[in-house]
Length: 205
Image 1 (spheres, rainbow, N blue to C red):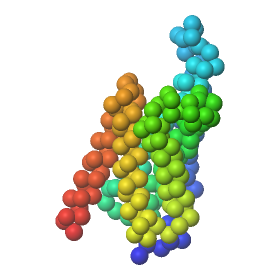
Image 2 (cartoon, one colour):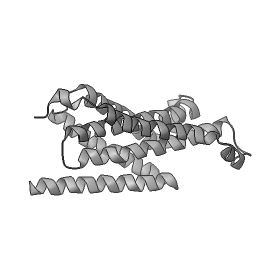
Image 3 (cartoon, rainbow, N blue to C red):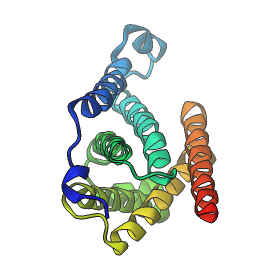
Image 4 (cartoon, helix red, strand yellow):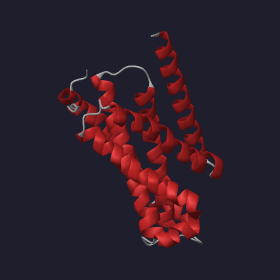
C-alpha cells in the first residue's frame, strides 16, 4: 500500500514548476483585460462590468488549462509519488483559478445573489456550477488531508474527474465558442484517451 506520509511531501521543484505557471497565467488573465489595445477595441462598451466579464472569461481558460494535465495524471496508468503530487498540484491550482472565476461571476456580476444566478443561468447550469465548486473543494480536502487509499474516496474521485469535466464540456464546447471551445475539446480528448489507456492497461494486467 502506498505510504500516506510520502504522498504528501510535494517537493520544492514540483511546487515551483506548477505554481510559477499558475501565477503567470492567472496574472495574465487578470491583467490582459486592462491592456490599452483591449480597451481601445471595446471603447464604446468598456466599463467596469466589461472588465469583470473578460476576467471571468480568461480565468475559466486558466481553469481548463490546469484541468487538462490533472485529468491525464489522474487516469493514466501508474501510481508513482511524483505523478500523484503533480496531479494534486494541477488539480489544486485549477480549483483556485475556478474560484477566482467563481468570484467574478457569482460575487461580482451577479452581486452574490443566487436568485440572480438562477435567473440568468437556469436551474440546471447554475446547480451544476455550484456542485462543481463544492465537490471539487471537497475532493481537494480529501486529497491533502485524508488517506486516499480508502475505496470510497477513490470512487468519488473517479466520478468527480468525470462529472466536473462533463459540465465543462457542456458549457465550453456545446454552449460557448472560440478559445474556450478548443480548450474544452482538448480537455475532453485528453480525458477520453486517458481513461481508455487506463482500461487497456488494466485489461493486460
